[in-house]
Image (cartoon, rainbow over all chains, first blue to last red; front, side, top):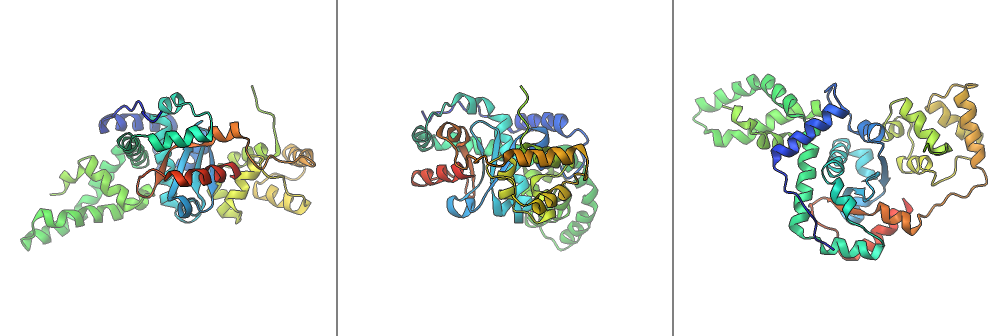
Length: 211
Length: 124
């Protein structure tokens, strides 16, 4: 109990799984990705809001061990739509990537569940969470769309970069600003936070397009 | 095997027909999503008042006098007198317990909070 048979998936592999998922459940590629509808109507997973889940347990959401329900903090569902969307996408990551692990763990009672949660190796836990996080970002911000929209928005940034260079400001110093600026433009299109876009620019190595 | 149609399942079917997610449907109609989710899952009884039932029917755009209209009211009536299982049995609860949680800091939930969490899930 407590040792998970975790497969350490490289980012490229998670990316491929996310692309396969979108091809199957959202082939139109229309943005923003209708994640709630995919969860409820295409995957047939119930969404159950729980009041004060975050306040009392610091939990934003979780998937039931039978993979049929995603529980979410009710305040996030009602008041933080981009956070809510990401929570759902992250949980889908667990459903898609960790189905086998979930099925192999046989929890027979609340007591055995508590023992399991207590004994899970923190590194295994972090790996599962990272994979869910990466998958969530990849389905809400599909790689091909991110690259396409970034290229459309680059000319505006290049103008600012030109000014920076004329003032002898190094790339290292304006890079964060440039990424944030792009994220501000793209986040509403994907209906995610700017933080998700910035992370994706880094993971997908798209920041190299910024001169 | 097809599941037996219940009032809650019918609500969800009609919401799905409109293509409205739980959040959107509840936001648009100023309904508490926690309660509506419980209604859909049969954890609380359909509203007693005809007025309230008609209000939900209008939100779901169920046409008055249509087959859906009659089925909706029949299912609500069929539920009358049944006491919903407002608390999950242990074997059902075990299936709903999480193995990983999305926490703010990406950390595990402390052991002393797990009993409380299980009870919250049981009531949700």
